[in-house]
Amino acid sequence: MFRLRRALVAIAIVLLAGQYGCKTDPLFENRQKVDGPVTSIQRPEGVEVADIVIVDAREVDLVEEVLTLRAKYYRSLETLRDYYKQKGYHRKQQWAEYELEDVEHIHAFKYLLDAEIPVSSLRPTDSIPQADALYTKGLELMKQGGHKVPALYRKDLMVEALGAFTELITRFPASDKIDDAAFYCGEIHKEYFKNQEEIALKWYERAWTWDPHTPHPARFQAAVVYDYRLHDRARALELYHEVLKCEAKNKSNAAFAVTRIHFLTGDLKSAGADEVGAEQ
View 1 (cartoon, helix red, strand yellow):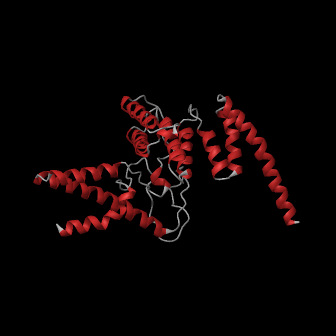
View 2 (spheres, one colour):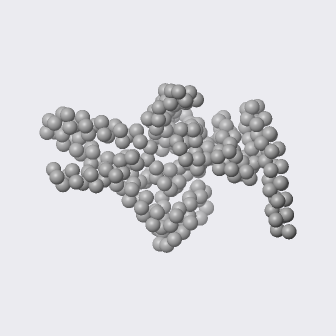
View 3 (cartoon, helix red, strand yellow):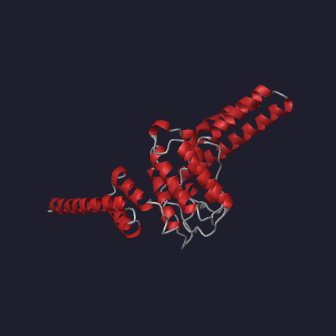
C-alpha cells in the first residue's frame, strides 16, 4: 500500500494537466524523430499541417513525458477505484470516483499544435446521426455554461462542450458537422480559456479549410484575434479582405471589416513611411 501511495504522489503533479495521453489517432500529426535543436517539427513533403514552433528537441521529450504521466495517473486512479470496489471499501471508492470526475473536467494541453489540432485535409461530406447528436450536445453544454451570458459562466461545462466537439471530429471525421464543431472549438478557446489565441486561430482556420463555405464567421473571428489580441496588422488585414469575399452575407461583420481595412491600410502605410524615414 505504501508503494502504491508513493507512486500516486509522484505522478499527482500532473493532476491539473488532465487525463489524456499522447494522440495516436491518424487525424493528428505524429511527430518525427528530432535529433537536435530545431524550430519546427519536420513533416513529410506535400503534407499540409500547422506550423508548429517548438523551443528545442528537449521540449518535445518533456511534453511526451507529461502526456505519458497523465495517462498513467488516470489509469492508476481507475485501478485504485476498482481495487476499493472489489474489497468493499465504498467510501474510498467514492473518493477515487470523485477524483476521476474532477480530472475529466480539466482541459489538458498537448503543447505542440500538431497534437492539439486535427489535420487540414478532412472534408465534411456525410450526414451522421451520432455526430449530429454530439454537436447538439456541445451546443447545449455551451448554452448551459453561459455562452454569451458572462454571469452564468461555468468553466466545467465549457470544457465538456469542447470535449463533445473534439470527440465529434475525432470519431466522425467525415461528418458534415466538423467545420461547425471546429468553429465552436475556436470560440471556446478564444472567449473562455486564457492565453489560448493560437489554438483558437487554428480551429477557426480548420473551419474554413474543411469547408470553404462554412456558415460561421470563422475568418472574421480570426481577423479580430489577429487585430486586437496579437496585433498582427498585416494578417488581420488579409483576413478582413477574406471576410468581404467569403462572409459578406453578415452585413455587420462586413461593415466592420471595411472600417478596419481602411484604418489598417493607412496604419501600415504610415508605419512603412516611418521606417523609410528612420533609414534615411
